[in-house]
Image (cartoon, rainbow over all chains, first blue to last red; front, top):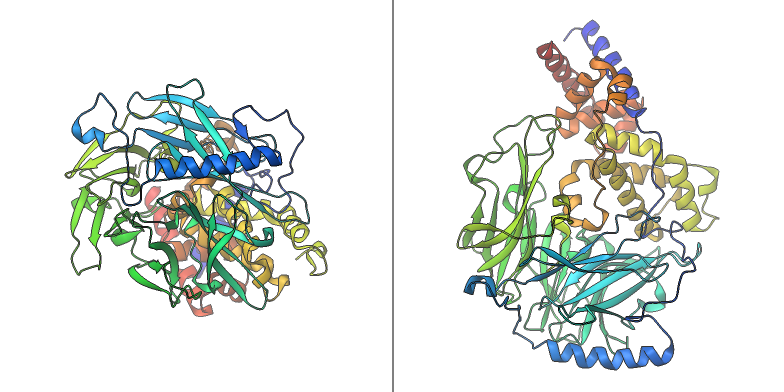
Length: 424
Length: 171
């Protein structure tokens, strides 16, 4: 390219980017969890079936939670609910799911949507308590119990305060849900919660958070009693291993003896799945854990995101191929978009390909939302993009069993673009 | 860095001030990279949340903007992963950037250039946008991208050549 040509292109780029940038005229406020973007606003009295409350209610709630969780959880025996009208395969699939509708905008604290994938209907909309933003939800071993997190700034000088709630749904009853505040808090209400998971027996909540001092930033993985809020055990590690795994970066397999968390590995910040034996007495998160799989950050077609199965014996790897804007039109050729299951310890070859997307695409992503004990059946989402300008990605959510993808009956009120945030 | 972001102030106030001063510019930058405003806003929000998480470990708070800008660039590269790993920050349904108003504002020629920029490989796209949209020096671009100056030079040069080729083919 001649100097004259280069100057011409430079001018074209300057002009076009300035014009393109001028399309953005304002941005939304810094959303939760944010330093000052969220303020608790006075609101109406709490709903009858939402327990926020006073000391007496809290004490009663704690007792109820403990009894309820123990009753609904049996270690090592995940208990999906039988649909009653479906096939045998259907009986292993969770029927109910929860969707967070909060999109990070302080002016719009949306409800939790509870849906039924058998009927395709929304069965409840759980409103957030006044001034509260329910920002995330995690599933547990059954499809009627969920853990919900809120993260709010209570004052400009208090950056963040976390609270966790137990959401129990009882479809068909007079009261379709019960939301109960857990007495768990990060020590000193300091730190930033990264991930959380309920123990298989429902007695404990594990929370990964960052904190420490400026001189020694650390991440802490703590286990808390859901009945008393007491911290029962904690492990720490240098903050450098903190991954961007988000709230789904921590799992508590059904055996109850280990936690599985995501960490950064090496200078390339590859994603590493590590298991921590929680029966030991140590407090070093790195020394007490071992890597079971490392996903190359530069090769998302091999493993973009690892999930461990409840039995702790298999890792499911999602994949991503191509990228929006990339000058490639054959990303999905030869079944490149797939869900893969690796045995533990990971061997050189994958145990099995759970599902291969058979069509073509310009870019695509596969994401696992739920798995049974050993990845015999999973619920997954595929996102398929084309190179055609202006054409949005196509989302599909379905049950994957025996290499087949069977679409799930999701309520039409849940936008397909939100499928990846559903929790079963 | 604005005066409001001096270390003597409360971190929350500093981050808020930083957001108020620079969010629009950073969203514009991310928009040029991704072509989607809600996604661009999510990336910037994530970057500031990351800053909040790491504030205590930030050796020099004066470099907070550089840190956030690097996070935004990384977020643009990882836009798919970010979308899935942080599902709570899902964007609202994207607004149609090809609206009649936008088409009128941009004009056909600018739309073609922007579309071509988005087709560049990530590194070339970053080098071109930082160099010619933000008018950064090669050293500044190198610092923002975390690469050597020579890499910036070659990436920008290749990016411009690729753009010239694409625009020529489009005619």
